Image 1 (cartoon, rainbow, N blue to C red):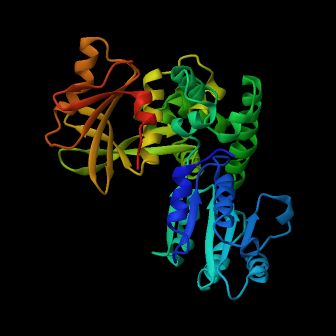
Image 2 (image 1 turned 90 degrees about the horizontal axis):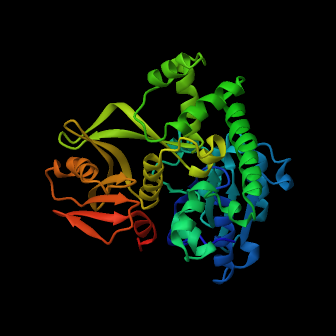
Length: 398
């Protein structure tokens, strides 16, 4: 198994706390493996195997478990009365009204409950109401570059980075020997898991149109867009589609963690803007699988990698606006705000000045960074820190 120390430590920090631990993320990002790693941790730290119940609702062993009552009764029959019981339920959204079983288990003093899901709607509606203030969400992504090289080795970093973005950051892809095997794996992931799951859940019958929307979004990573703009562009290209249909498909892709929607923030007015947004992918390898390397925008791909790294590090991330200038990312956490510009190269003076200008125009003393693929030593431009991308990705973090 590939170590996922950041997420594992998150789970460990909440052990025996009176909150439900909910791990969310795209299918195959490693949620079940994380649970296995955590169970290994428990068993090596004094917890008896009889205290652990692990249900994976994608496993055929539990195929007959159809209702929340089936789920509850199965788990209740496994509980040891005078000991803490560690309960793990993978892909809990497969059970209708699962929140009723979850709530019934939560109130038991001898239950420490962990659930995973591949849909952000897991934490909406009735469950969110039931569990208000009683859960912690751990948002899981495919492998970071640092996790990737911890498995494949840190020699020839540049080659490893190229493999990381063009092959895939899904953990299982690392175990495959050839590009053909990786492509076959991504083909299955894309068509069986992503397409079928979204189509079934959202009752989408026009699979060809759904795939066309996905291709369009994958080809426009990091571009400001709106549902109207997407619909108009696709229609002018011969694929007539309505704005409500685009919105329905985008919502499904965001809910399934295939896409991440990033809204805009005005750094001067300190206000959140409702117009325009950008979308980034959970795995750049899916973009190369679907579209190949032709016309790949290296700058926007770099942006995508940085965006994912920022949310891994716990930031809330927005696209910044400062007067008429755009800041690639405004990253906020409990410690404050940071600003990031991302550019594939700034070797030309004009390019460097263009990328620095939005950061110079921000009138505060928060940290400002310029991240590039240029192999240069750490540089400061009047307090703006220029960093080499792979160095940033593998630096120590919290």
